[in-house]
Amino acid sequence: MFTKKRWMHKSQDEICPRVRSKLEKNEEYARSCTVVAASDSKFQVFDMNDMLVENLGQSSCSCRWWDHYGIPCSHAVACCNWVRVPPENYVHKWMKKDSYLISYSEGIKLI
Image (cartoon, rainbow, N blue to C red; front, side, top):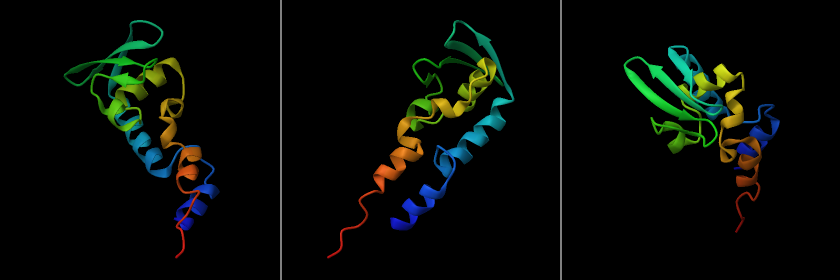
């Protein structure tokens, strides 16, 4: 636990490394999406044969991936790109560096 805490403390990124890699994959998949705006925060996203509803204001997507994992799905990333906002802003707070460091702050109690 001490090693993980020290490793994350050295990281310059505000989100965890595994979350960063998943977000980068979603950025690749987002290139195949077409976004149609319905309002400032609601979008309709076309991905292959699917039509999904995206709500950036509530951090939710009809694919349910974002709701379940707390990391913006490829559809959400496509909407973020459309409004020119970094998708990192929509990663849930418990996936960020500060929360990670709090989780590993105590360490293991010695006997």
